[in-house]
Length: 223
Image 1 (cartoon, rainbow, N blue to C red):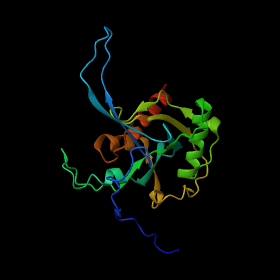
Image 2 (image 1 turned 45 degrees about the vertical axis):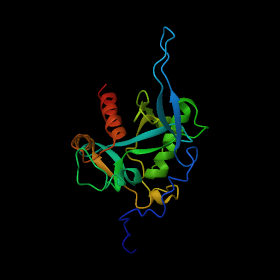
Image 3 (image 1 turned 180 degrees about the vertical axis):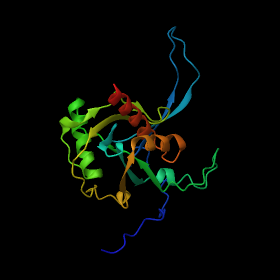
Image 4 (image 1 turned 90 degrees about the vertical axis):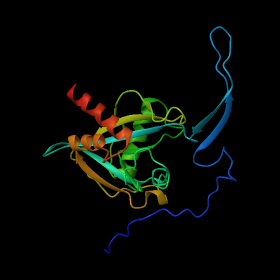
């Protein structure tokens, strides 16, 4: 087998911003004129609000873990993330000298309309574990890690539902993926759980759902 060719950049072929509608594409932007209504019936001054929605509202995060020779281990996946990559060239408050072409995070995926209730969350988590990590688990094996959370509630309506599943002793095959160019070059790795948490705290891994889900898993296992 020849050497795998790595993705080195994302090329912008056309900027469609000026001609695109707000209600099309992967993200949907609503531009609203609002005012606050107070309990005494009075109203605030008018102001503008932008709200970003996905066609599929929420997502599930899946923390795959196993008990290894050196203790608890956690799987991450490195993915192409254009929004992070295109920070380059913008004025940053604290420059970090990184390109952010790749972002390391735990497995995650959008919830489909048929994924209803806790059973739906578990079903989607199991499906994402197989698609993104190549590990087969049943929905019944998926652990819910507490309440969902917002990532950027000032602009983004999406909530993330954190889950975890113990895959100790399970076979890990090559992830099938969904065929998207954004999954090209995606790769997985196993971390010692404490090392991954330290990497989140140091900024080596810069994904909020990874850190929060890991902290919740620690609390659940210790409890």
